[in-house]
Length: 141
Image 1 (cartoon, rainbow, N blue to C red):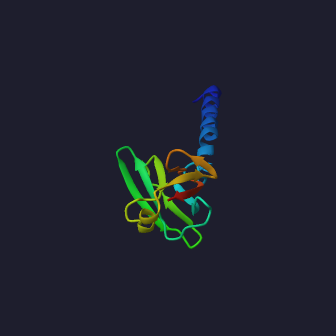
Image 2 (cartoon, rainbow, N blue to C red; image 1 turned 135 degrees about the vertical axis):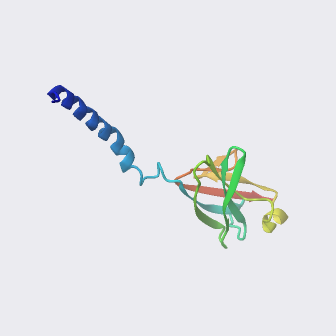
Image 3 (cartoon, rainbow, N blue to C red; image 1 turned 90 degrees about the vertical axis):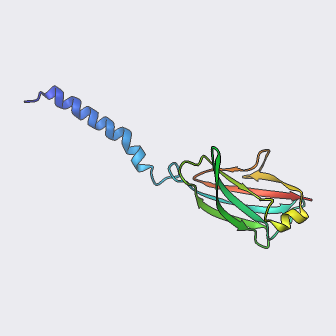
């Protein structure tokens, strides 16, 4: 026959495990565990007018490997958006304007500046995994 002291210890540990694990179980539907990423933005010239027909690529990156996930084209006002599921094991989502296979970009423009959520960034072009990010590009000739 077990003592009351042994039962109370078991009860304590059972409650502690539930208290520690419950938040993890309840957060599974939140962005903490989601790898679905949405990126949207606008491609403009330095003067501010939108540029149509520019390709934007979404690439998952990990050590020594990358995987192209999506290629979208800007509309007549320069807007684009895309949603991707970043595979597990990949540490970053890069959004960029590719040089190759992007005729309008390579014929007319020399490069671009990148803006994340309205702030200019120096490095191109990491995006948040499991969230929503505004990524704008300003092209220059």
